[in-house]
View 1: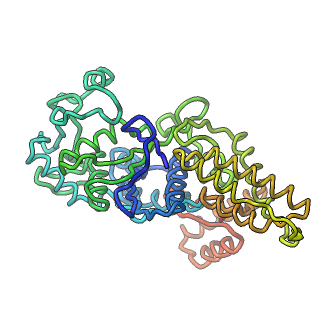
View 2: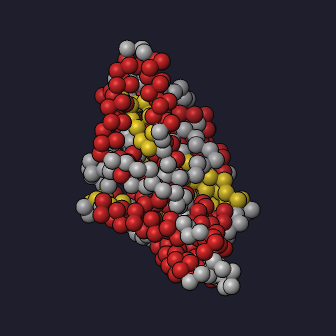
View 3: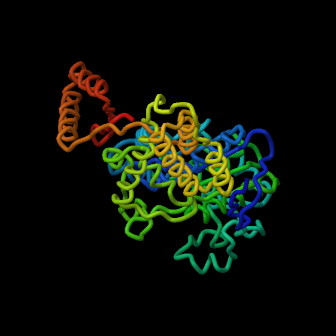
Length: 454
Protein backbone atom coordinates (compact mmCIF):
# COMPACT_ATOMS: atom_id res chain seq x y z
CA UNK A 1 0.00 0.00 0.00
CA UNK A 2 1.40 3.39 -1.03
CA UNK A 3 0.47 6.94 0.01
CA UNK A 4 1.68 10.29 -1.28
CA UNK A 5 3.63 11.99 1.50
CA UNK A 6 3.77 15.77 1.08
CA UNK A 7 6.99 15.86 3.09
CA UNK A 8 8.75 13.49 0.70
CA UNK A 9 7.01 14.86 -2.38
CA UNK A 10 6.34 11.33 -3.63
CA UNK A 11 4.50 8.10 -2.92
CA UNK A 12 5.90 5.97 -0.11
CA UNK A 13 5.12 2.53 1.27
CA UNK A 14 2.70 2.81 4.16
CA UNK A 15 4.17 1.42 7.38
CA UNK A 16 2.55 2.80 10.54
CA UNK A 17 4.40 2.60 13.85
CA UNK A 18 2.11 0.09 15.54
CA UNK A 19 -1.15 -1.81 15.42
CA UNK A 20 -3.17 1.38 15.82
CA UNK A 21 -2.82 4.04 13.11
CA UNK A 22 -2.81 7.46 14.75
CA UNK A 23 -4.48 10.10 12.61
CA UNK A 24 -4.94 13.84 13.20
CA UNK A 25 -7.07 15.95 10.86
CA UNK A 26 -7.39 19.72 11.14
CA UNK A 27 -10.95 20.78 11.89
CA UNK A 28 -13.00 23.89 11.25
CA UNK A 29 -12.80 27.36 12.71
CA UNK A 30 -16.34 27.58 14.03
CA UNK A 31 -17.66 30.95 12.88
CA UNK A 32 -19.84 30.06 9.88
CA UNK A 33 -21.68 27.19 8.23
CA UNK A 34 -19.77 24.37 6.57
CA UNK A 35 -19.54 24.55 2.79
CA UNK A 36 -18.84 22.05 0.02
CA UNK A 37 -15.09 22.71 0.36
CA UNK A 38 -15.26 21.45 3.95
CA UNK A 39 -17.30 18.48 2.74
CA UNK A 40 -14.59 17.64 0.22
CA UNK A 41 -11.84 17.48 2.85
CA UNK A 42 -13.82 15.54 5.44
CA UNK A 43 -15.32 13.08 2.96
CA UNK A 44 -11.79 12.33 1.72
CA UNK A 45 -10.35 11.68 5.18
CA UNK A 46 -13.45 9.71 6.11
CA UNK A 47 -12.77 7.41 3.16
CA UNK A 48 -9.08 7.13 4.07
CA UNK A 49 -10.06 6.06 7.57
CA UNK A 50 -12.70 3.62 6.30
CA UNK A 51 -10.25 2.05 3.86
CA UNK A 52 -7.49 1.63 6.42
CA UNK A 53 -9.98 -0.14 8.67
CA UNK A 54 -11.10 -2.27 5.70
CA UNK A 55 -7.45 -3.28 5.25
CA UNK A 56 -7.30 -4.46 8.86
CA UNK A 57 -5.88 -1.44 10.70
CA UNK A 58 -7.25 0.00 13.89
CA UNK A 59 -7.54 3.79 13.84
CA UNK A 60 -7.35 6.48 16.50
CA UNK A 61 -8.69 9.63 14.88
CA UNK A 62 -8.51 13.12 16.41
CA UNK A 63 -10.05 16.21 14.83
CA UNK A 64 -9.96 19.60 16.49
CA UNK A 65 -12.31 22.56 16.65
CA UNK A 66 -10.92 26.08 16.73
CA UNK A 67 -13.49 27.68 19.01
CA UNK A 68 -11.65 30.94 19.73
CA UNK A 69 -10.12 33.04 16.96
CA UNK A 70 -10.16 36.57 15.53
CA UNK A 71 -12.89 35.59 13.04
CA UNK A 72 -15.06 34.08 15.75
CA UNK A 73 -14.67 37.15 17.95
CA UNK A 74 -15.50 39.50 15.05
CA UNK A 75 -18.58 37.51 13.97
CA UNK A 76 -19.84 37.21 17.55
CA UNK A 77 -19.47 40.94 18.00
CA UNK A 78 -21.56 41.56 14.88
CA UNK A 79 -24.29 39.26 16.19
CA UNK A 80 -23.92 40.60 19.75
CA UNK A 81 -23.55 37.18 21.31
CA UNK A 82 -20.64 35.61 23.29
CA UNK A 83 -17.91 34.11 21.07
CA UNK A 84 -18.07 30.67 22.72
CA UNK A 85 -21.83 30.52 22.22
CA UNK A 86 -21.34 31.30 18.53
CA UNK A 87 -18.67 28.62 18.21
CA UNK A 88 -20.80 26.02 19.99
CA UNK A 89 -23.75 26.66 17.70
CA UNK A 90 -21.65 26.33 14.54
CA UNK A 91 -20.00 23.18 15.88
CA UNK A 92 -23.43 21.61 16.35
CA UNK A 93 -24.37 22.62 12.83
CA UNK A 94 -21.10 21.15 11.54
CA UNK A 95 -21.99 17.81 13.15
CA UNK A 96 -25.46 17.88 11.60
CA UNK A 97 -24.00 18.51 8.13
CA UNK A 98 -21.27 15.89 8.39
CA UNK A 99 -23.63 13.30 9.87
CA UNK A 100 -25.95 13.89 6.91
CA UNK A 101 -23.00 13.16 4.58
CA UNK A 102 -22.43 9.84 6.40
CA UNK A 103 -19.04 10.99 7.68
CA UNK A 104 -18.00 8.88 10.64
CA UNK A 105 -17.16 10.84 13.74
CA UNK A 106 -13.61 11.09 15.08
CA UNK A 107 -12.74 9.40 18.36
CA UNK A 108 -12.13 12.74 20.07
CA UNK A 109 -12.97 16.34 19.10
CA UNK A 110 -10.79 18.54 21.35
CA UNK A 111 -11.46 22.27 21.39
CA UNK A 112 -8.85 24.99 21.70
CA UNK A 113 -10.50 26.54 24.76
CA UNK A 114 -10.43 23.19 26.56
CA UNK A 115 -6.69 22.66 26.03
CA UNK A 116 -5.32 25.91 27.47
CA UNK A 117 -3.23 24.12 30.12
CA UNK A 118 -1.52 21.97 27.48
CA UNK A 119 -0.88 25.02 25.29
CA UNK A 120 0.72 26.92 28.18
CA UNK A 121 2.91 23.92 29.04
CA UNK A 122 4.25 23.74 25.47
CA UNK A 123 4.84 27.49 25.26
CA UNK A 124 6.73 27.40 28.57
CA UNK A 125 8.86 24.54 27.27
CA UNK A 126 9.69 26.40 24.06
CA UNK A 127 10.64 29.50 26.03
CA UNK A 128 12.87 27.46 28.33
CA UNK A 129 14.70 25.97 25.33
CA UNK A 130 15.19 29.36 23.67
CA UNK A 131 12.82 28.56 20.80
CA UNK A 132 10.42 31.35 21.76
CA UNK A 133 10.41 34.86 23.21
CA UNK A 134 7.90 37.12 24.94
CA UNK A 135 6.94 40.62 23.85
CA UNK A 136 4.27 42.74 25.53
CA UNK A 137 2.26 39.76 26.77
CA UNK A 138 2.50 37.78 23.53
CA UNK A 139 4.88 34.88 22.87
CA UNK A 140 6.46 34.18 19.46
CA UNK A 141 8.29 31.19 18.01
CA UNK A 142 11.84 31.80 16.75
CA UNK A 143 11.81 30.40 13.25
CA UNK A 144 15.58 30.83 12.78
CA UNK A 145 16.13 28.46 15.72
CA UNK A 146 14.59 25.65 13.66
CA UNK A 147 16.97 25.01 10.72
CA UNK A 148 14.55 22.62 9.01
CA UNK A 149 11.82 25.25 8.69
CA UNK A 150 10.29 24.97 5.20
CA UNK A 151 10.89 21.24 4.80
CA UNK A 152 7.18 20.45 4.34
CA UNK A 153 6.34 23.23 1.87
CA UNK A 154 9.79 22.91 0.21
CA UNK A 155 10.52 26.63 0.52
CA UNK A 156 13.48 28.61 1.81
CA UNK A 157 13.27 31.48 4.27
CA UNK A 158 14.18 34.26 1.85
CA UNK A 159 11.47 33.22 -0.62
CA UNK A 160 8.89 33.08 2.16
CA UNK A 161 9.80 36.56 3.35
CA UNK A 162 9.70 38.01 -0.17
CA UNK A 163 6.14 36.71 -0.56
CA UNK A 164 4.91 38.37 2.63
CA UNK A 165 2.76 41.48 2.26
CA UNK A 166 3.32 42.82 5.77
CA UNK A 167 4.73 41.68 9.08
CA UNK A 168 4.67 42.92 12.64
CA UNK A 169 7.66 45.07 13.54
CA UNK A 170 7.61 43.84 17.12
CA UNK A 171 8.76 40.39 15.99
CA UNK A 172 12.47 39.57 15.93
CA UNK A 173 12.16 38.00 12.48
CA UNK A 174 9.42 38.38 9.85
CA UNK A 175 8.50 34.66 9.83
CA UNK A 176 8.19 34.33 13.61
CA UNK A 177 4.64 33.39 14.56
CA UNK A 178 2.46 33.79 17.64
CA UNK A 179 2.22 30.98 20.16
CA UNK A 180 0.25 33.07 22.66
CA UNK A 181 -1.62 36.29 21.84
CA UNK A 182 -2.11 39.03 24.42
CA UNK A 183 -5.79 39.86 24.74
CA UNK A 184 -7.25 43.13 23.50
CA UNK A 185 -9.92 45.05 25.44
CA UNK A 186 -13.26 43.26 25.35
CA UNK A 187 -11.85 39.98 24.03
CA UNK A 188 -12.15 36.61 25.81
CA UNK A 189 -8.97 35.72 27.68
CA UNK A 190 -7.27 33.10 29.83
CA UNK A 191 -4.68 33.71 32.50
CA UNK A 192 -1.09 32.76 31.69
CA UNK A 193 2.45 33.43 32.99
CA UNK A 194 2.65 36.23 30.38
CA UNK A 195 -0.67 37.84 31.24
CA UNK A 196 -4.17 37.49 29.91
CA UNK A 197 -4.46 36.14 26.39
CA UNK A 198 -5.38 33.18 24.21
CA UNK A 199 -3.61 30.55 22.07
CA UNK A 200 -2.24 31.31 18.63
CA UNK A 201 -3.87 29.30 15.85
CA UNK A 202 -0.96 26.93 15.14
CA UNK A 203 -0.13 25.92 18.70
CA UNK A 204 -3.54 24.43 19.42
CA UNK A 205 -3.08 21.62 16.90
CA UNK A 206 0.33 20.68 18.28
CA UNK A 207 -1.09 20.69 21.81
CA UNK A 208 -3.97 18.42 20.85
CA UNK A 209 -1.95 16.04 18.69
CA UNK A 210 0.75 15.60 21.34
CA UNK A 211 -1.78 15.15 24.14
CA UNK A 212 -4.03 12.59 22.46
CA UNK A 213 -1.70 10.82 19.99
CA UNK A 214 1.84 11.17 21.35
CA UNK A 215 5.12 12.70 20.20
CA UNK A 216 5.05 11.12 16.74
CA UNK A 217 1.88 10.33 14.80
CA UNK A 218 1.28 8.31 11.66
CA UNK A 219 -1.01 10.52 9.55
CA UNK A 220 -1.69 14.23 9.66
CA UNK A 221 -4.32 15.43 7.23
CA UNK A 222 -5.78 18.68 5.98
CA UNK A 223 -6.29 20.72 2.85
CA UNK A 224 -3.39 21.80 0.65
CA UNK A 225 -4.01 25.39 1.74
CA UNK A 226 -2.79 24.40 5.23
CA UNK A 227 0.66 23.20 4.16
CA UNK A 228 2.06 26.69 4.71
CA UNK A 229 2.10 28.24 7.17
CA UNK A 230 -0.12 26.14 9.44
CA UNK A 231 1.40 22.68 9.09
CA UNK A 232 4.91 24.05 8.62
CA UNK A 233 4.53 25.84 11.95
CA UNK A 234 3.12 22.75 13.62
CA UNK A 235 6.24 20.81 12.69
CA UNK A 236 8.59 23.52 13.94
CA UNK A 237 6.97 23.99 17.34
CA UNK A 238 6.24 20.28 17.93
CA UNK A 239 9.69 18.96 17.06
CA UNK A 240 11.38 21.82 18.93
CA UNK A 241 9.33 21.06 22.04
CA UNK A 242 9.61 17.26 22.08
CA UNK A 243 12.94 16.69 20.32
CA UNK A 244 11.15 13.86 18.47
CA UNK A 245 11.66 13.72 14.69
CA UNK A 246 9.50 13.28 12.74
CA UNK A 247 6.43 14.78 14.36
CA UNK A 248 4.40 13.15 11.55
CA UNK A 249 5.30 10.14 9.41
CA UNK A 250 2.87 10.78 6.55
CA UNK A 251 1.48 14.20 5.61
CA UNK A 252 -1.67 13.81 3.47
CA UNK A 253 -3.26 16.85 1.86
CA UNK A 254 -6.52 17.04 -0.05
CA UNK A 255 -7.01 19.26 -3.08
CA UNK A 256 -8.84 22.57 -3.14
CA UNK A 257 -12.50 22.98 -4.06
CA UNK A 258 -12.95 25.62 -6.75
CA UNK A 259 -15.94 27.57 -7.99
CA UNK A 260 -15.69 29.20 -11.38
CA UNK A 261 -11.91 28.54 -11.33
CA UNK A 262 -11.43 30.32 -8.00
CA UNK A 263 -10.72 28.74 -4.64
CA UNK A 264 -13.93 28.34 -2.68
CA UNK A 265 -13.58 30.27 0.58
CA UNK A 266 -15.47 32.49 3.00
CA UNK A 267 -13.21 35.43 2.12
CA UNK A 268 -14.28 35.39 -1.55
CA UNK A 269 -17.91 34.68 -0.74
CA UNK A 270 -18.25 32.05 -3.47
CA UNK A 271 -19.61 29.38 -1.13
CA UNK A 272 -22.12 26.57 -1.50
CA UNK A 273 -23.33 25.45 1.90
CA UNK A 274 -23.58 21.77 2.76
CA UNK A 275 -27.12 22.23 4.08
CA UNK A 276 -28.21 23.89 0.85
CA UNK A 277 -26.71 21.27 -1.43
CA UNK A 278 -28.30 18.44 0.58
CA UNK A 279 -31.74 19.93 -0.02
CA UNK A 280 -31.25 19.21 -3.72
CA UNK A 281 -29.00 16.17 -3.85
CA UNK A 282 -28.49 12.95 -1.94
CA UNK A 283 -25.44 12.42 0.30
CA UNK A 284 -24.34 9.65 -2.07
CA UNK A 285 -24.38 12.09 -5.00
CA UNK A 286 -22.22 14.58 -3.10
CA UNK A 287 -19.74 11.87 -2.11
CA UNK A 288 -19.64 10.50 -5.66
CA UNK A 289 -18.95 13.98 -7.03
CA UNK A 290 -16.05 14.44 -4.59
CA UNK A 291 -14.56 10.96 -4.92
CA UNK A 292 -14.69 10.77 -8.72
CA UNK A 293 -11.47 12.82 -8.79
CA UNK A 294 -8.19 11.96 -7.11
CA UNK A 295 -8.14 13.41 -3.61
CA UNK A 296 -5.02 15.52 -4.26
CA UNK A 297 -6.46 17.15 -7.38
CA UNK A 298 -8.42 20.42 -7.42
CA UNK A 299 -12.15 19.96 -7.93
CA UNK A 300 -14.48 22.48 -9.56
CA UNK A 301 -18.01 22.64 -8.22
CA UNK A 302 -20.99 22.88 -10.53
CA UNK A 303 -24.60 21.82 -10.13
CA UNK A 304 -24.36 19.97 -13.44
CA UNK A 305 -21.52 17.82 -12.08
CA UNK A 306 -23.46 16.93 -8.94
CA UNK A 307 -26.59 16.20 -11.01
CA UNK A 308 -24.51 13.76 -13.07
CA UNK A 309 -23.28 12.18 -9.84
CA UNK A 310 -26.89 11.80 -8.67
CA UNK A 311 -27.60 9.78 -11.79
CA UNK A 312 -24.48 7.72 -11.15
CA UNK A 313 -25.55 7.02 -7.57
CA UNK A 314 -28.92 5.88 -8.88
CA UNK A 315 -27.18 3.40 -11.20
CA UNK A 316 -25.37 1.92 -8.22
CA UNK A 317 -28.64 1.68 -6.27
CA UNK A 318 -30.43 0.07 -9.21
CA UNK A 319 -27.96 -2.83 -9.27
CA UNK A 320 -29.08 -3.73 -5.75
CA UNK A 321 -32.78 -3.81 -6.64
CA UNK A 322 -32.65 -7.00 -8.72
CA UNK A 323 -34.44 -9.75 -6.83
CA UNK A 324 -32.32 -12.60 -5.53
CA UNK A 325 -34.76 -15.05 -7.10
CA UNK A 326 -33.72 -13.80 -10.54
CA UNK A 327 -30.66 -16.01 -10.39
CA UNK A 328 -31.34 -19.67 -11.25
CA UNK A 329 -28.22 -20.83 -9.49
CA UNK A 330 -26.79 -22.55 -12.56
CA UNK A 331 -23.95 -20.04 -12.80
CA UNK A 332 -22.75 -17.37 -10.39
CA UNK A 333 -21.27 -13.97 -11.15
CA UNK A 334 -17.74 -14.05 -9.78
CA UNK A 335 -17.25 -10.62 -8.17
CA UNK A 336 -14.01 -11.39 -6.31
CA UNK A 337 -11.96 -10.07 -9.23
CA UNK A 338 -13.74 -6.72 -8.90
CA UNK A 339 -12.91 -6.57 -5.21
CA UNK A 340 -9.26 -7.30 -6.00
CA UNK A 341 -9.16 -4.47 -8.54
CA UNK A 342 -10.88 -2.16 -6.06
CA UNK A 343 -8.17 -2.88 -3.48
CA UNK A 344 -5.41 -2.35 -6.05
CA UNK A 345 -6.84 1.07 -6.88
CA UNK A 346 -7.20 2.14 -3.25
CA UNK A 347 -3.76 0.78 -2.36
CA UNK A 348 -2.35 3.22 -4.91
CA UNK A 349 -2.65 6.39 -2.79
CA UNK A 350 -6.41 6.01 -2.25
CA UNK A 351 -7.32 6.29 -5.92
CA UNK A 352 -11.06 6.62 -5.41
CA UNK A 353 -11.66 7.62 -9.04
CA UNK A 354 -10.37 4.25 -10.23
CA UNK A 355 -12.12 2.41 -7.39
CA UNK A 356 -15.44 3.99 -8.42
CA UNK A 357 -14.82 2.94 -12.01
CA UNK A 358 -14.53 -0.64 -10.73
CA UNK A 359 -17.86 -0.28 -8.90
CA UNK A 360 -19.60 0.84 -12.08
CA UNK A 361 -18.10 -2.08 -14.01
CA UNK A 362 -19.42 -4.43 -11.33
CA UNK A 363 -22.80 -2.70 -11.57
CA UNK A 364 -22.94 -3.32 -15.31
CA UNK A 365 -22.07 -6.99 -14.78
CA UNK A 366 -24.77 -7.36 -12.12
CA UNK A 367 -27.40 -5.83 -14.42
CA UNK A 368 -26.35 -7.99 -17.38
CA UNK A 369 -26.12 -11.17 -15.31
CA UNK A 370 -29.52 -10.59 -13.74
CA UNK A 371 -31.09 -10.45 -17.21
CA UNK A 372 -29.37 -13.72 -18.11
CA UNK A 373 -30.57 -15.51 -14.99
CA UNK A 374 -27.12 -15.71 -13.37
CA UNK A 375 -26.93 -15.80 -9.56
CA UNK A 376 -25.99 -12.26 -8.50
CA UNK A 377 -26.51 -12.44 -4.73
CA UNK A 378 -22.84 -12.56 -3.75
CA UNK A 379 -21.96 -9.88 -6.30
CA UNK A 380 -24.60 -7.57 -4.80
CA UNK A 381 -23.13 -8.18 -1.34
CA UNK A 382 -19.66 -7.27 -2.61
CA UNK A 383 -20.98 -4.13 -4.33
CA UNK A 384 -22.65 -3.03 -1.10
CA UNK A 385 -19.51 -3.80 0.92
CA UNK A 386 -17.16 -1.89 -1.38
CA UNK A 387 -19.58 1.00 -1.68
CA UNK A 388 -19.61 1.15 2.12
CA UNK A 389 -15.82 1.51 2.14
CA UNK A 390 -16.35 4.74 0.19
CA UNK A 391 -19.13 5.79 2.55
CA UNK A 392 -22.03 5.30 0.13
CA UNK A 393 -25.30 4.23 1.75
CA UNK A 394 -27.06 3.54 -1.58
CA UNK A 395 -30.34 4.56 0.03
CA UNK A 396 -32.97 6.41 -1.94
CA UNK A 397 -32.90 10.21 -1.70
CA UNK A 398 -35.75 11.75 0.27
CA UNK A 399 -38.11 13.32 -2.22
CA UNK A 400 -38.16 17.12 -2.26
CA UNK A 401 -40.24 19.54 -4.31
CA UNK A 402 -40.40 23.35 -4.34
CA UNK A 403 -43.91 23.22 -2.87
CA UNK A 404 -43.05 20.91 0.02
CA UNK A 405 -39.83 22.80 0.73
CA UNK A 406 -41.75 26.10 0.86
CA UNK A 407 -44.36 24.60 3.20
CA UNK A 408 -41.69 23.22 5.54
CA UNK A 409 -40.00 26.62 5.56
CA UNK A 410 -43.32 28.25 6.49
CA UNK A 411 -43.85 25.81 9.37
CA UNK A 412 -40.32 26.48 10.61
CA UNK A 413 -41.02 30.23 10.52
CA UNK A 414 -44.29 29.78 12.43
CA UNK A 415 -42.41 27.72 15.02
CA UNK A 416 -39.90 30.58 15.42
CA UNK A 417 -42.80 32.93 16.19
CA UNK A 418 -44.23 30.46 18.71
CA UNK A 419 -40.87 30.16 20.45
CA UNK A 420 -40.49 33.93 20.65
CA UNK A 421 -43.92 34.06 22.31
CA UNK A 422 -42.91 31.20 24.65
CA UNK A 423 -45.58 28.89 23.28
CA UNK A 424 -43.30 25.93 23.75
CA UNK A 425 -45.93 23.19 23.55
CA UNK A 426 -47.14 24.19 20.08
CA UNK A 427 -43.55 24.72 18.92
CA UNK A 428 -42.62 21.21 20.09
CA UNK A 429 -45.64 19.75 18.27
CA UNK A 430 -44.40 21.25 15.02
CA UNK A 431 -40.89 19.90 15.63
CA UNK A 432 -42.19 16.40 16.42
CA UNK A 433 -44.60 16.40 13.50
CA UNK A 434 -41.88 17.36 11.04
CA UNK A 435 -39.50 14.82 12.57
CA UNK A 436 -42.10 12.10 11.95
CA UNK A 437 -42.13 13.21 8.31
CA UNK A 438 -38.34 12.98 8.04
CA UNK A 439 -37.44 16.64 8.58
CA UNK A 440 -34.83 17.81 11.12
CA UNK A 441 -34.96 21.29 12.67
CA UNK A 442 -31.89 23.10 14.01
CA UNK A 443 -32.20 26.25 16.12
CA UNK A 444 -29.59 28.93 15.31
CA UNK A 445 -29.03 32.63 16.15
CA UNK A 446 -30.46 33.50 12.73
CA UNK A 447 -33.59 31.38 13.14
CA UNK A 448 -34.59 27.78 12.54
CA UNK A 449 -32.71 25.80 9.91
CA UNK A 450 -34.20 22.60 8.47
CA UNK A 451 -33.21 19.66 6.30
CA UNK A 452 -34.39 16.23 5.34
CA UNK A 453 -33.11 13.26 7.30
CA UNK A 454 -31.07 10.79 5.29
